[in-house]
Image 1 (cartoon, rainbow, N blue to C red):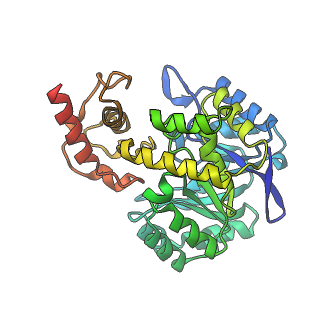
Image 2: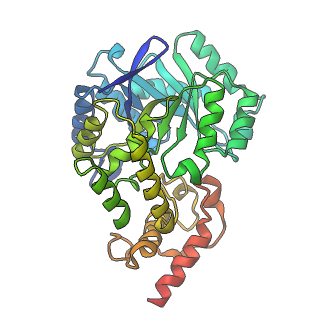
Image 3: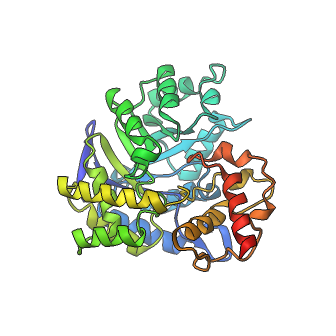
Length: 370
């Protein structure tokens, strides 16, 4: 593992994200403690010292689990980050105290305002709530070491947010070689860099989408580097961005963890020739990718029809890529796209700004013709 310095701290270039721990088979709201502990232990043994979660991750069990798993290690041996997501009626002070208790900690190394978007910016910047004032007081008391935010906002919204308050210690944004263009992540990177705010990265492989590309993309990368995994190209793209501090990856299996640890064993950014190859790959993906869903499931909680939207979108994308649907396990069971009432509520929660009702309508039409 290689490390990058932040203030006077050495932080692992790869951090463990807390959104994708394996779940118990018969209890979808509870993380499998045995498998999860093995992942955390292996991560620490491999040199990872940064762990990221949020109040809402995996129904709140991510915080509870990580608190349990990390309590077996000296508190000063790891760095811990969690987040507050603003919702109607949410009380930051109450939630902050609950998080400390859940995580079995006296302080957080990093504390973030979670998911700044066009829909949430007004709530976060509401002067009557004084969220920043409360968090700065916790920082003064030593209960927060560094204050940051995560953002799924468009560049203009990000700039507006930073005009409101820009003395953040760090920012967490979605960044990968596809979203560099598709979601204008380059401009977001530039905005933060110009303001001197270090960047942490989420969705480096776009929810796993960049681990297994279309046939042409896979062949291009394997021909260029036969001994490297497809995933490694996404991570090495990020290594070439100087203002990226730490890349977060939600790892569900030991195989994923070990592959990622091998990639981050050393700093190994893309060469100019490799960067050209990756741009070729990106262009092939843009012809076939379909809809850029990252399977965050933010849309599901708000869906009045209780649809498994990410699953349906996977079916839509697979059909666009291969013309087949059978590879998408579970698509034939449960509610289908025809049950969408086109209310549009899901779109308010989608970080990727997908027109979900339109996609589901198209998928419904595809299924009706089969």
